[in-house]
Amino acid sequence: MSGRLIVVSNRVNPPSGDGEESVGGLAMALAAALKEYSGIWFGWSGKTTETFTGELNVQKVGGVTAATVDLEEIDLEEYYNGYANKTLWPLFHYRNDLAAFDRAFDKGYMRVNCRFAETLAPLIRPDDIVWVHDYHLIPLAKELRALGIKNRIGFFLHIPWPAHQVMVNLPRHRQLVESMFDYDLVGFQTAEYQQAFEEYVLNEAEGALVRPGLLMGFGRRLEVGAFPIGIDAADFARMKTSARARRMRDLMMACTVFRHLIVGVDRLDYSKGLEERFLGFEAFLQRNPDMRREVLMLQIAPVSREAVEAYQEIRGRLDALSGRINGEFADVDWAPFRWVNRNYRRDELAGIYAAARVGLVTPLRDGMNLVAKEYVAAQDPDDPGVLILSRFAGAALQMQDALLVNPNSPEEIADALKRALAMEKAERVRRWRALFETVSREDVSAWRDAFVKALEGNAESRRPALVV
Ligand code: GDG
Image 1 (cartoon, rainbow, N blue to C red):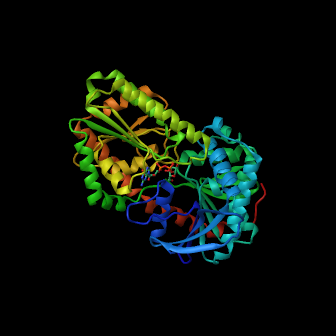
Image 2: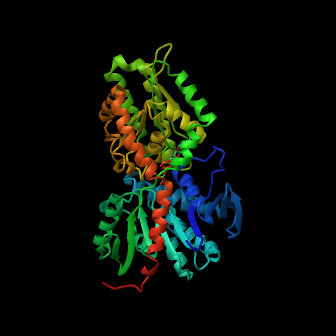
Image 3: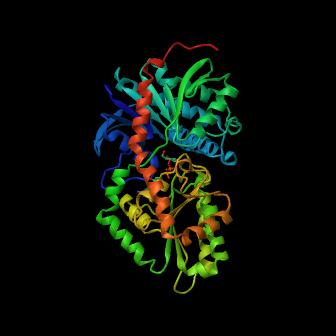
Protein backbone atom coordinates (compact mmCIF):
# COMPACT_ATOMS: atom_id res chain seq x y z
CA MET A 1 0.00 0.00 0.00
CA SER A 2 1.57 3.30 -1.04
CA GLY A 3 -0.50 5.72 1.03
CA ARG A 4 -1.77 5.50 4.58
CA LEU A 5 -4.74 3.61 5.95
CA ILE A 6 -7.21 5.92 7.64
CA VAL A 7 -9.55 4.00 9.88
CA VAL A 8 -12.72 5.74 11.02
CA SER A 9 -15.06 4.52 13.75
CA ASN A 10 -17.46 6.16 16.14
CA ARG A 11 -15.22 5.79 19.15
CA VAL A 12 -11.43 5.77 19.15
CA ASN A 13 -10.08 3.73 22.05
CA PRO A 14 -6.88 1.91 21.23
CA PRO A 15 -6.02 -0.73 23.83
CA SER A 16 -3.10 0.34 25.99
CA GLY A 17 -1.46 -3.04 25.39
CA ASP A 18 -1.12 -3.99 29.05
CA GLY A 19 -4.13 -6.31 29.12
CA GLU A 20 -6.54 -3.70 30.54
CA GLU A 21 -8.39 -3.13 27.31
CA SER A 22 -11.89 -1.83 26.98
CA VAL A 23 -14.79 -4.11 26.19
CA GLY A 24 -15.97 -4.54 22.63
CA GLY A 25 -15.01 -6.49 19.59
CA LEU A 26 -14.59 -3.51 17.32
CA ALA A 27 -11.89 -1.75 19.34
CA MET A 28 -9.77 -4.88 19.54
CA ALA A 29 -10.10 -5.54 15.84
CA LEU A 30 -9.26 -2.00 14.74
CA ALA A 31 -6.22 -1.74 16.96
CA ALA A 32 -4.96 -4.99 15.46
CA ALA A 33 -5.77 -3.73 11.96
CA LEU A 34 -3.63 -0.63 12.43
CA LYS A 35 -0.73 -2.45 14.02
CA GLU A 36 0.89 -3.27 10.70
CA TYR A 37 -0.14 -0.33 8.56
CA SER A 38 0.99 3.24 8.87
CA GLY A 39 -2.11 5.25 9.40
CA ILE A 40 -4.51 7.12 11.58
CA TRP A 41 -7.53 6.08 13.62
CA PHE A 42 -10.10 8.87 13.54
CA GLY A 43 -13.32 9.26 15.54
CA TRP A 44 -15.00 10.56 18.66
CA SER A 45 -12.85 11.12 21.76
CA GLY A 46 -15.55 9.97 24.19
CA LYS A 47 -15.74 13.55 25.59
CA THR A 48 -18.39 16.21 25.14
CA THR A 49 -18.07 20.00 24.97
CA GLU A 50 -20.69 22.75 25.18
CA THR A 51 -20.39 23.69 21.51
CA PHE A 52 -18.77 21.75 18.71
CA THR A 53 -15.33 23.20 17.83
CA GLY A 54 -14.04 20.62 15.35
CA GLU A 55 -10.67 20.78 17.12
CA LEU A 56 -8.53 17.71 16.49
CA ASN A 57 -6.55 16.00 19.19
CA VAL A 58 -3.77 13.82 17.78
CA GLN A 59 -1.75 11.45 19.96
CA LYS A 60 0.02 8.10 19.90
CA VAL A 61 -1.64 5.41 22.03
CA GLY A 62 -0.27 1.86 22.14
CA GLY A 63 1.55 2.33 18.81
CA VAL A 64 -1.49 3.79 17.02
CA THR A 65 -1.94 7.43 15.91
CA ALA A 66 -5.33 8.45 17.24
CA ALA A 67 -7.01 11.62 15.91
CA THR A 68 -10.09 12.46 17.94
CA VAL A 69 -12.75 15.10 18.07
CA ASP A 70 -15.16 16.00 20.89
CA LEU A 71 -18.92 16.10 20.31
CA GLU A 72 -21.76 18.07 21.92
CA GLU A 73 -24.05 16.53 24.52
CA ILE A 74 -26.98 16.76 22.07
CA ASP A 75 -24.93 14.85 19.47
CA LEU A 76 -24.46 12.07 21.95
CA GLU A 77 -28.17 12.00 22.69
CA GLU A 78 -29.43 12.08 19.11
CA TYR A 79 -26.67 10.40 17.14
CA TYR A 80 -25.09 7.84 19.50
CA ASN A 81 -27.77 6.94 22.05
CA GLY A 82 -30.49 7.89 19.57
CA TYR A 83 -30.18 6.90 15.91
CA ALA A 84 -27.28 4.46 16.33
CA ASN A 85 -28.34 2.62 19.47
CA LYS A 86 -32.11 3.14 19.67
CA THR A 87 -32.92 2.92 15.96
CA LEU A 88 -30.34 1.05 13.87
CA TRP A 89 -28.99 -1.40 16.49
CA PRO A 90 -32.38 -2.87 17.48
CA LEU A 91 -33.69 -2.89 13.91
CA PHE A 92 -30.60 -4.59 12.48
CA HIS A 93 -30.85 -7.19 15.28
CA TYR A 94 -34.51 -7.90 14.43
CA ARG A 95 -35.86 -6.05 17.47
CA ASN A 96 -38.24 -3.73 15.70
CA ASP A 97 -40.27 -3.72 18.93
CA LEU A 98 -37.41 -1.86 20.65
CA ALA A 99 -36.61 0.52 17.80
CA ALA A 100 -37.39 4.22 18.22
CA PHE A 101 -38.13 6.19 15.07
CA ASP A 102 -37.62 9.86 15.82
CA ARG A 103 -36.75 12.54 13.27
CA ALA A 104 -34.55 14.36 15.77
CA PHE A 105 -32.35 11.25 15.96
CA ASP A 106 -32.16 11.13 12.19
CA LYS A 107 -31.10 14.79 12.03
CA GLY A 108 -28.52 14.33 14.78
CA TYR A 109 -27.09 11.33 12.95
CA MET A 110 -26.69 13.28 9.71
CA ARG A 111 -25.25 16.28 11.59
CA VAL A 112 -22.55 14.19 13.31
CA ASN A 113 -21.63 12.41 10.08
CA CYS A 114 -21.26 15.84 8.48
CA ARG A 115 -19.11 17.05 11.39
CA PHE A 116 -16.92 13.98 11.20
CA ALA A 117 -16.44 14.51 7.47
CA GLU A 118 -15.54 18.19 7.86
CA THR A 119 -12.98 17.40 10.55
CA LEU A 120 -11.53 14.41 8.75
CA ALA A 121 -11.32 15.77 5.18
CA PRO A 122 -8.29 18.05 5.74
CA LEU A 123 -6.31 15.08 7.09
CA ILE A 124 -6.73 12.99 3.95
CA ARG A 125 -3.83 12.93 1.48
CA PRO A 126 -4.35 11.95 -2.18
CA ASP A 127 -3.00 8.39 -1.94
CA ASP A 128 -4.59 7.45 1.42
CA ILE A 129 -7.34 4.91 1.59
CA VAL A 130 -10.18 5.39 4.04
CA TRP A 131 -11.87 2.53 5.89
CA VAL A 132 -15.09 3.45 7.72
CA HIS A 133 -16.57 1.16 10.38
CA ASP A 134 -20.04 0.33 11.46
CA TYR A 135 -23.60 1.53 11.60
CA HIS A 136 -22.84 4.86 13.28
CA LEU A 137 -21.19 6.16 10.11
CA ILE A 138 -23.11 4.81 7.13
CA PRO A 139 -23.48 8.24 5.38
CA LEU A 140 -19.86 9.33 5.98
CA ALA A 141 -18.64 8.67 2.43
CA LYS A 142 -21.50 10.76 1.02
CA GLU A 143 -20.44 13.68 3.23
CA LEU A 144 -16.77 13.23 2.31
CA ARG A 145 -17.59 13.11 -1.40
CA ALA A 146 -19.58 16.35 -1.02
CA LEU A 147 -16.36 17.92 0.28
CA GLY A 148 -14.48 16.78 -2.82
CA ILE A 149 -12.74 13.67 -1.41
CA LYS A 150 -11.99 11.32 -4.30
CA ASN A 151 -9.96 8.69 -2.43
CA ARG A 152 -11.01 5.09 -2.22
CA ILE A 153 -13.39 4.69 0.69
CA GLY A 154 -14.57 1.37 2.07
CA PHE A 155 -17.22 0.56 4.67
CA PHE A 156 -17.44 -2.49 6.92
CA LEU A 157 -20.61 -3.35 8.83
CA HIS A 158 -19.86 -5.19 12.08
CA ILE A 159 -23.49 -6.07 12.81
CA PRO A 160 -26.04 -8.06 10.77
CA TRP A 161 -27.68 -6.61 7.68
CA PRO A 162 -31.36 -7.46 8.18
CA ALA A 163 -33.73 -9.12 5.75
CA HIS A 164 -35.33 -6.82 3.19
CA GLN A 165 -38.75 -6.93 4.90
CA VAL A 166 -37.18 -5.85 8.20
CA MET A 167 -35.10 -3.07 6.66
CA VAL A 168 -38.12 -1.35 5.12
CA ASN A 169 -39.41 -0.62 8.63
CA LEU A 170 -36.86 2.17 8.81
CA PRO A 171 -38.27 5.53 7.75
CA ARG A 172 -36.07 6.96 4.97
CA HIS A 173 -34.42 3.59 4.41
CA ARG A 174 -33.85 4.41 0.75
CA GLN A 175 -31.81 7.53 1.55
CA LEU A 176 -29.66 5.60 3.99
CA VAL A 177 -28.95 2.77 1.58
CA GLU A 178 -28.42 5.15 -1.34
CA SER A 179 -25.68 6.88 0.66
CA MET A 180 -23.82 3.55 0.76
CA PHE A 181 -23.28 3.84 -2.98
CA ASP A 182 -20.77 6.62 -2.29
CA TYR A 183 -18.36 3.95 -1.04
CA ASP A 184 -16.14 1.98 -3.38
CA LEU A 185 -16.59 -1.20 -1.37
CA VAL A 186 -19.09 -2.29 1.28
CA GLY A 187 -18.18 -5.33 3.37
CA PHE A 188 -20.36 -7.57 5.52
CA GLN A 189 -19.48 -10.23 8.07
CA THR A 190 -21.09 -13.09 6.12
CA ALA A 191 -22.40 -14.01 2.68
CA GLU A 192 -25.88 -14.18 4.27
CA TYR A 193 -25.82 -10.48 5.23
CA GLN A 194 -24.36 -9.57 1.85
CA GLN A 195 -27.24 -11.40 0.16
CA ALA A 196 -29.79 -9.63 2.33
CA PHE A 197 -28.29 -6.30 1.26
CA GLU A 198 -28.34 -7.34 -2.39
CA GLU A 199 -31.94 -8.39 -2.08
CA TYR A 200 -32.85 -4.98 -0.69
CA VAL A 201 -31.08 -3.25 -3.59
CA LEU A 202 -32.71 -5.52 -6.19
CA ASN A 203 -36.15 -4.85 -4.75
CA GLU A 204 -36.01 -1.24 -3.58
CA ALA A 205 -33.39 0.47 -5.73
CA GLU A 206 -34.07 -0.74 -9.26
CA GLY A 207 -30.98 -2.87 -8.75
CA ALA A 208 -29.18 -5.59 -10.64
CA LEU A 209 -26.38 -7.98 -9.81
CA VAL A 210 -23.87 -7.41 -12.60
CA ARG A 211 -21.64 -10.27 -11.39
CA PRO A 212 -20.99 -11.73 -7.94
CA GLY A 213 -19.77 -8.82 -5.82
CA LEU A 214 -20.80 -6.04 -8.20
CA LEU A 215 -24.17 -4.40 -7.69
CA MET A 216 -26.06 -1.75 -9.60
CA GLY A 217 -28.59 0.31 -7.72
CA PHE A 218 -29.91 3.89 -7.71
CA GLY A 219 -28.30 4.12 -11.16
CA ARG A 220 -24.83 3.59 -9.64
CA ARG A 221 -22.41 0.76 -9.03
CA LEU A 222 -20.98 -0.68 -5.84
CA GLU A 223 -18.59 -3.49 -4.97
CA VAL A 224 -19.80 -5.69 -2.10
CA GLY A 225 -18.26 -8.65 -0.31
CA ALA A 226 -18.20 -10.84 2.78
CA PHE A 227 -15.19 -10.45 5.09
CA PRO A 228 -15.65 -12.47 8.29
CA ILE A 229 -13.77 -10.79 11.11
CA GLY A 230 -11.44 -12.82 13.33
CA ILE A 231 -9.47 -12.41 16.53
CA ASP A 232 -5.79 -11.59 16.92
CA ALA A 233 -4.95 -15.27 17.29
CA ALA A 234 -1.21 -14.77 17.77
CA ASP A 235 -1.75 -12.21 20.50
CA PHE A 236 -4.29 -14.49 22.16
CA ALA A 237 -1.87 -17.42 22.11
CA ARG A 238 0.73 -15.23 23.83
CA MET A 239 -1.76 -13.93 26.36
CA LYS A 240 -3.13 -17.34 27.35
CA THR A 241 0.27 -18.43 28.64
CA SER A 242 0.82 -15.21 30.63
CA ALA A 243 1.21 -15.42 34.40
CA ARG A 244 -2.08 -13.60 34.96
CA ALA A 245 -4.02 -15.91 32.65
CA ARG A 246 -2.54 -18.98 34.32
CA ARG A 247 -3.29 -17.63 37.78
CA MET A 248 -6.90 -16.99 36.81
CA ARG A 249 -7.19 -20.45 35.29
CA ASP A 250 -5.86 -22.04 38.49
CA LEU A 251 -8.23 -19.97 40.58
CA MET A 252 -11.23 -21.08 38.51
CA MET A 253 -10.05 -24.71 38.62
CA ALA A 254 -9.77 -24.49 42.39
CA CYS A 255 -13.33 -23.30 42.81
CA THR A 256 -14.72 -25.94 40.47
CA VAL A 257 -13.07 -29.07 41.91
CA PHE A 258 -15.27 -32.08 40.95
CA ARG A 259 -17.41 -29.74 38.89
CA HIS A 260 -17.44 -28.52 35.30
CA LEU A 261 -17.37 -24.81 34.56
CA ILE A 262 -19.79 -23.47 31.92
CA VAL A 263 -18.90 -19.93 30.87
CA GLY A 264 -20.64 -17.08 29.05
CA VAL A 265 -18.97 -13.70 28.36
CA ASP A 266 -20.97 -10.92 26.72
CA ARG A 267 -21.57 -7.20 26.79
CA LEU A 268 -24.85 -6.85 28.64
CA ASP A 269 -27.05 -6.49 25.56
CA TYR A 270 -30.49 -7.83 24.61
CA SER A 271 -29.10 -9.22 21.36
CA LYS A 272 -26.89 -11.68 23.25
CA GLY A 273 -29.76 -13.99 24.28
CA LEU A 274 -28.96 -13.92 27.98
CA GLU A 275 -32.51 -14.50 29.24
CA GLU A 276 -32.97 -17.53 27.00
CA ARG A 277 -29.52 -18.78 28.03
CA PHE A 278 -30.37 -18.50 31.73
CA LEU A 279 -33.63 -20.35 31.09
CA GLY A 280 -31.68 -23.00 29.18
CA PHE A 281 -29.39 -23.54 32.16
CA GLU A 282 -32.41 -23.69 34.48
CA ALA A 283 -34.04 -26.30 32.22
CA PHE A 284 -30.80 -28.31 32.26
CA LEU A 285 -30.79 -28.33 36.08
CA GLN A 286 -34.47 -29.27 36.23
CA ARG A 287 -34.11 -32.18 33.82
CA ASN A 288 -30.81 -33.56 35.11
CA PRO A 289 -31.00 -33.76 38.91
CA ASP A 290 -28.04 -36.17 38.95
CA MET A 291 -25.80 -33.59 37.24
CA ARG A 292 -26.76 -30.58 39.34
CA ARG A 293 -23.81 -30.80 41.67
CA GLU A 294 -21.42 -31.35 38.79
CA VAL A 295 -21.70 -27.92 37.21
CA LEU A 296 -21.14 -24.24 37.85
CA MET A 297 -22.29 -21.65 35.36
CA LEU A 298 -20.44 -18.34 35.28
CA GLN A 299 -21.90 -15.50 33.23
CA ILE A 300 -19.73 -12.41 32.90
CA ALA A 301 -21.63 -9.45 31.46
CA PRO A 302 -20.15 -5.97 31.89
CA VAL A 303 -22.84 -3.33 31.54
CA SER A 304 -22.97 -1.27 28.33
CA ARG A 305 -25.08 1.58 26.87
CA GLU A 306 -26.60 2.34 30.25
CA ALA A 307 -28.23 5.53 28.95
CA VAL A 308 -30.61 3.45 26.81
CA GLU A 309 -33.73 2.24 28.68
CA ALA A 310 -33.85 -1.20 27.07
CA TYR A 311 -30.44 -1.92 28.60
CA GLN A 312 -31.56 -0.89 32.09
CA GLU A 313 -34.62 -3.11 31.84
CA ILE A 314 -32.80 -6.22 30.71
CA ARG A 315 -30.40 -5.94 33.63
CA GLY A 316 -33.30 -5.98 36.09
CA ARG A 317 -34.82 -9.04 34.45
CA LEU A 318 -31.53 -10.93 34.47
CA ASP A 319 -30.86 -10.07 38.13
CA ALA A 320 -34.25 -11.58 38.99
CA LEU A 321 -33.72 -14.68 36.87
CA SER A 322 -30.26 -15.46 38.25
CA GLY A 323 -31.63 -15.04 41.80
CA ARG A 324 -34.48 -17.42 40.98
CA ILE A 325 -32.14 -20.12 39.64
CA ASN A 326 -29.91 -20.01 42.70
CA GLY A 327 -32.92 -19.81 45.02
CA GLU A 328 -34.38 -22.92 43.40
CA PHE A 329 -31.28 -25.11 43.24
CA ALA A 330 -28.62 -23.87 45.68
CA ASP A 331 -27.72 -25.79 48.81
CA VAL A 332 -25.95 -24.66 51.98
CA ASP A 333 -22.54 -25.53 50.56
CA TRP A 334 -23.15 -24.97 46.87
CA ALA A 335 -24.78 -22.67 44.30
CA PRO A 336 -25.06 -23.41 40.58
CA PHE A 337 -24.89 -19.92 39.09
CA ARG A 338 -22.61 -16.88 39.20
CA TRP A 339 -23.77 -13.68 37.56
CA VAL A 340 -21.07 -11.03 37.39
CA ASN A 341 -21.42 -7.54 35.91
CA ARG A 342 -17.75 -6.64 36.21
CA ASN A 343 -15.26 -6.00 33.47
CA TYR A 344 -12.20 -8.29 33.48
CA ARG A 345 -8.81 -7.83 31.88
CA ARG A 346 -8.35 -9.72 28.63
CA ASP A 347 -5.60 -11.93 30.02
CA GLU A 348 -7.87 -12.83 32.94
CA LEU A 349 -10.66 -13.69 30.49
CA ALA A 350 -8.24 -15.99 28.65
CA GLY A 351 -7.64 -17.85 31.94
CA ILE A 352 -11.38 -18.12 32.62
CA TYR A 353 -12.08 -19.49 29.13
CA ALA A 354 -9.25 -22.00 29.56
CA ALA A 355 -10.80 -23.36 32.77
CA ALA A 356 -14.27 -23.84 31.26
CA ARG A 357 -15.45 -27.22 29.97
CA VAL A 358 -18.22 -25.46 28.04
CA GLY A 359 -18.30 -22.09 26.27
CA LEU A 360 -21.93 -21.04 26.01
CA VAL A 361 -22.37 -18.43 23.25
CA THR A 362 -26.01 -18.04 22.33
CA PRO A 363 -26.83 -14.61 20.85
CA LEU A 364 -30.26 -14.22 19.23
CA ARG A 365 -28.51 -12.30 16.43
CA ASP A 366 -24.86 -11.33 16.15
CA GLY A 367 -22.78 -9.91 13.31
CA MET A 368 -19.95 -12.33 14.06
CA ASN A 369 -19.24 -12.93 17.79
CA LEU A 370 -15.61 -12.86 18.80
CA VAL A 371 -16.16 -14.52 22.18
CA ALA A 372 -16.78 -17.85 20.41
CA LYS A 373 -13.39 -17.54 18.70
CA GLU A 374 -11.59 -16.43 21.88
CA TYR A 375 -13.02 -19.41 23.78
CA VAL A 376 -11.65 -21.81 21.14
CA ALA A 377 -8.25 -20.07 21.07
CA ALA A 378 -7.91 -20.40 24.85
CA GLN A 379 -8.45 -24.17 25.08
CA ASP A 380 -5.86 -26.78 26.04
CA PRO A 381 -5.23 -28.79 22.82
CA ASP A 382 -4.95 -32.05 24.82
CA ASP A 383 -8.16 -31.60 26.79
CA PRO A 384 -10.30 -28.92 25.13
CA GLY A 385 -13.76 -27.79 26.14
CA VAL A 386 -16.86 -27.73 23.94
CA LEU A 387 -18.27 -24.64 22.24
CA ILE A 388 -22.07 -24.32 22.15
CA LEU A 389 -22.90 -21.68 19.57
CA SER A 390 -26.03 -19.98 18.32
CA ARG A 391 -26.85 -20.67 14.71
CA PHE A 392 -27.73 -16.96 14.44
CA ALA A 393 -24.21 -15.71 15.17
CA GLY A 394 -22.26 -14.85 12.03
CA ALA A 395 -19.50 -17.07 13.46
CA ALA A 396 -21.71 -20.16 13.05
CA LEU A 397 -21.01 -20.24 9.32
CA GLN A 398 -17.30 -20.76 9.96
CA MET A 399 -17.67 -22.84 13.13
CA GLN A 400 -19.77 -25.81 12.11
CA ASP A 401 -17.88 -28.09 14.51
CA ALA A 402 -19.38 -26.32 17.50
CA LEU A 403 -22.66 -27.68 18.90
CA LEU A 404 -25.01 -25.36 17.04
CA VAL A 405 -28.28 -24.44 18.75
CA ASN A 406 -31.36 -22.34 18.22
CA PRO A 407 -30.84 -19.74 20.98
CA ASN A 408 -34.58 -19.08 21.29
CA SER A 409 -35.14 -22.56 22.68
CA PRO A 410 -34.16 -23.15 26.33
CA GLU A 411 -34.78 -26.88 25.75
CA GLU A 412 -32.28 -26.99 22.91
CA ILE A 413 -29.73 -25.19 25.07
CA ALA A 414 -30.37 -27.68 27.89
CA ASP A 415 -29.91 -30.65 25.53
CA ALA A 416 -26.69 -29.19 24.13
CA LEU A 417 -25.33 -28.66 27.66
CA LYS A 418 -26.02 -32.29 28.51
CA ARG A 419 -24.34 -33.45 25.31
CA ALA A 420 -21.31 -31.19 25.79
CA LEU A 421 -20.76 -32.31 29.37
CA ALA A 422 -20.96 -35.99 28.42
CA MET A 423 -18.77 -35.67 25.33
CA GLU A 424 -15.81 -38.06 25.14
CA LYS A 425 -12.35 -36.56 24.93
CA ALA A 426 -11.70 -37.94 21.43
CA GLU A 427 -14.73 -36.09 20.04
CA ARG A 428 -13.86 -32.92 21.93
CA VAL A 429 -10.34 -32.96 20.46
CA ARG A 430 -11.60 -33.66 16.95
CA ARG A 431 -14.10 -30.83 17.03
CA TRP A 432 -11.69 -28.41 18.66
CA ARG A 433 -8.92 -29.04 16.12
CA ALA A 434 -11.20 -28.13 13.24
CA LEU A 435 -12.43 -25.00 15.04
CA PHE A 436 -8.95 -23.90 16.07
CA GLU A 437 -7.66 -24.30 12.54
CA THR A 438 -10.33 -21.89 11.27
CA VAL A 439 -9.86 -19.40 14.11
CA SER A 440 -6.09 -19.31 13.51
CA ARG A 441 -6.26 -19.11 9.73
CA GLU A 442 -9.13 -16.65 9.43
CA ASP A 443 -7.81 -14.24 12.03
CA VAL A 444 -7.93 -10.47 12.27
CA SER A 445 -4.93 -9.96 9.98
CA ALA A 446 -6.53 -12.11 7.28
CA TRP A 447 -9.71 -10.05 7.62
CA ARG A 448 -7.87 -6.73 7.40
CA ASP A 449 -5.68 -7.80 4.50
CA ALA A 450 -8.60 -9.18 2.51
CA PHE A 451 -10.62 -6.00 2.96
CA VAL A 452 -7.76 -3.60 2.24
CA LYS A 453 -6.73 -5.61 -0.80
CA ALA A 454 -10.27 -5.61 -2.16
CA LEU A 455 -10.54 -1.86 -1.55
CA GLU A 456 -7.22 -1.15 -3.25
CA GLY A 457 -8.03 -3.63 -6.01
CA ASN A 458 -10.95 -1.70 -7.33
CA ALA A 459 -9.07 1.57 -7.66
CA GLU A 460 -10.23 1.80 -11.22
CA SER A 461 -13.83 1.14 -10.42
CA ARG A 462 -15.01 4.70 -9.68
CA ARG A 463 -16.48 5.41 -13.03
CA PRO A 464 -19.12 7.97 -13.89
CA ALA A 465 -22.57 6.92 -12.72
CA LEU A 466 -24.22 4.50 -15.07
CA VAL A 467 -27.91 4.76 -15.62
CA VAL A 468 -29.78 1.46 -15.95
C1 GDG B 1 -19.60 -6.12 17.56
C2 GDG B 1 -20.67 -7.02 16.91
C3 GDG B 1 -18.83 -8.51 16.08
C4 GDG B 1 -16.53 -8.94 26.88
N1 GDG B 1 -16.51 -8.84 28.23
C5 GDG B 1 -15.30 -8.39 28.56
C6 GDG B 1 -14.55 -8.19 27.39
N2 GDG B 1 -15.33 -8.55 26.38
C7 GDG B 1 -14.88 -8.55 24.98
C8 GDG B 1 -14.83 -9.95 24.43
C9 GDG B 1 -14.85 -9.70 22.93
C10 GDG B 1 -15.66 -8.42 22.85
O1 GDG B 1 -15.71 -7.83 24.15
C11 GDG B 1 -17.07 -8.68 22.41
O2 GDG B 1 -17.06 -8.93 21.04
P1 GDG B 1 -18.31 -9.59 20.29
O3 GDG B 1 -17.87 -9.88 18.92
O4 GDG B 1 -18.69 -10.81 21.04
O5 GDG B 1 -19.52 -8.57 20.39
P2 GDG B 1 -19.80 -6.96 20.24
O6 GDG B 1 -19.15 -6.17 21.30
O7 GDG B 1 -21.28 -6.85 20.17
O8 GDG B 1 -19.13 -6.56 18.84
C12 GDG B 1 -20.16 -8.46 16.83
C13 GDG B 1 -17.85 -7.49 16.63
O9 GDG B 1 -18.43 -6.18 16.70
C14 GDG B 1 -16.60 -7.40 15.77
O10 GDG B 1 -16.92 -7.17 14.43
O11 GDG B 1 -18.28 -9.81 16.24
O12 GDG B 1 -21.11 -9.28 16.17
O13 GDG B 1 -21.90 -6.96 17.64
O14 GDG B 1 -13.54 -9.45 22.45
O15 GDG B 1 -13.69 -10.61 24.90
N3 GDG B 1 -13.29 -7.73 27.38
C15 GDG B 1 -12.70 -7.43 28.57
N4 GDG B 1 -13.38 -7.60 29.75
C16 GDG B 1 -14.66 -8.08 29.80
O16 GDG B 1 -15.23 -8.24 30.89
N5 GDG B 1 -11.44 -6.97 28.61
